Image (cartoon, rainbow, N blue to C red):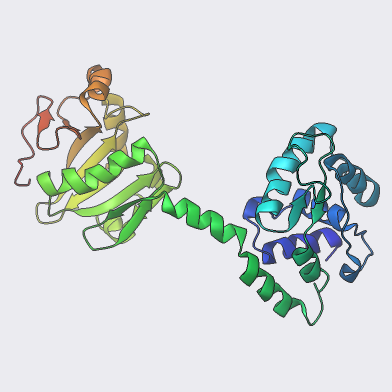
Length: 312
């Protein structure tokens, strides 16, 4: 591998997140270490350097030209993460220098320099383990922080899922935790979407049995439940940023489910009455409405009363 590829591999080993495992970050590291293409990793050295100097080094030594207006990208998307990972120290010559000073400089940390100099030697593995033990991996810190903000939900089979934060996903959690036990407690959770990951949960085996095209799961509403005993599919749209089960949406879903023989119930779920009133003129007839702020009641749009508080 060339020096840039080696540098990316090194950053990955040091625990940098995926967003920093790239050419920009690799070249920044090489500039900090003053390492040219043919230099040995053991020749890495500590020096103070400005963002501008990093750009000049990259252009001169690796023939990669970054515009001056990319300095902020390197600072925010590479240098800051290097600092958090314990790889870089800001203003080691004058820690009191203001953050926005044009004289701000950066240098490789002593701990990082020692482990990097052992890269591709017999001492690399033990040195890396010691560094990670002391500093931790930034990617694990980020993942932990992200998981701490996830919204947990327990499925009927005991499986725990984590929704990404947000009003829309909070409503989906309430559909599972408040709507389902009240109106359809004997249902299986077939599908759950997530605003960040799109697909959070998918029961492929059951969808195949119901002749629902798995390749079109992105066309399904946010929550899909199934009552096996009564052969009823319940399709629920969580309404926050997006609209309710409108006539157009219902036609689309009927087309998607044209080979499914199960009875279908359509539900638009709202967080409160104010959100419901915003969409009331776009809700399809013969569908149901559930409002989280009044969880014990349903609004039936002209159709038969599919649900009771005791179940379907």
